[in-house]
Length: 231
Image (cartoon, rainbow, N blue to C red; front, top):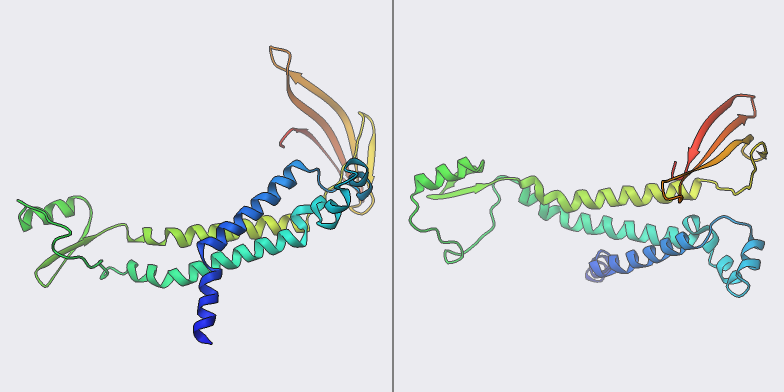
């Protein structure tokens, strides 16, 4: 039983599972990029007459907060966590100053170099030099063995943070003309579009889109801001 559990954990933590999960997550992200998100169900049924029901059934209209996407991310986080935990013991062992990989005499041969020259060269290269049993041992940058673990932790934070942010955020779409306003009842604020204009480059192509907006909160406080694409 113990051996079976170990095999299951090893499989879940494997690179093969990670690649499959990443491919599925990437596929969902591509769909979420190409398919407009958070529109009304009627919009999808009218725009995509054949695929509309499937889009709604798979929650492709709200991909980043859908159960399928969240499950994929959670499974990927579990995969990374187990992979990190299984490899961390060996990495910590390599981090110790007393650790040196074993090798045979035929693997590394340095000719025409005296021991004193070897010590001097190693110290010049900022190696930590130790001597044991008549052998010179040197090592440096041992912290590098933790690179994979640090990368895994960073990915876990990135995926969990992104998923949590998307799952708890809200999004809406409104069309306004300069001088118009829209009240968001649930959020309790009103958005005014004060002005909208474009700038052009020397060839006449659109360079940037600008919107000057004012937000009025339910308590009467206001804030004006100039927005442009990607801000």
